[in-house]
Image (cartoon, protein in one colour):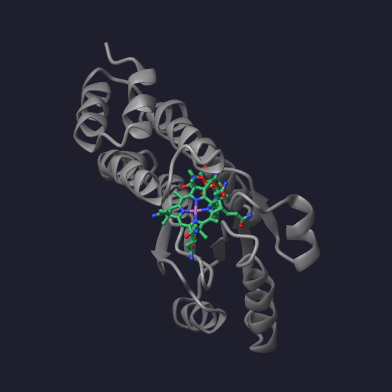
Length: 212
Ligand code: B1M
């Protein structure tokens, strides 16, 4: 039986091959993909975050850990998306301008897909103008924004203002997330929801469009 603590260690040590094969093994043993994500991969990345903060890890180690995490996410993605097939709506999601962090945003996108949403992922470093254009073109029910830096979270407000200016805000629900984001911040900038984690993001998305 795979011990999820070994998956945590795999991410922390940046062992992409090992993390991938442990994830495959856990799936084969019938462990739920959500459990692998929440009790293995995410706690692993949290340890990496602590080490980065304490100067035990530097950017290269973090990137190697992120690669290990992504190797396992590639396996989980189609499985999480399969869990429910009833269509609930469309989400456009992206990491805001100046911000290259995408691990949390990718997980949020996966959970939304798993919850029955079609997800259009704009990637990272998405300017308010690009967000507005994507909303205009795709007419989503929800816009999800992610920011990991205190210096970039301000672009969330700029994006909302730009949407208002273009009269695209009224029918759109906006959910924001990322380590520096708080409920208070979300309220202050006029977002409809704050997601402290990806599962809550999917729950809020369903609630906001009235499809629990
Ligand atoms: Co960066 N980094 N980083 N980094 N990095 C942080 C964010 C930092 C807190 C580390 C630290 O100092 N302790 C710090 C920010 C400080 C601050 O602003 N206050 C920081 C810094 C300073 C930087 C650089 C400036 C470092 C440098 O170059 N000197 C630089 C900036 C680059 C840039 O963006 N312009 C940088 C670079 C990087 C790497 C490239 C090395 C790498 C990113 C790799 C990648 O993403 N592909 C990286 C990483 C990995 C981190 C830490 C260690 C981990 C982030 C992560 O992936 N967490 C991070 C430390 C930390 O957060 N503790 C740190 C795991 C992920 C699952 O959690 O992203 O919070 P999170 O997502 C969660 C929820 O927040 C929520 O759901 C997710 C899953 O549950 N969520 C959403 C997030 N977005 C959502 C959207 C939604 C819904 C939910 O929409 C619906």
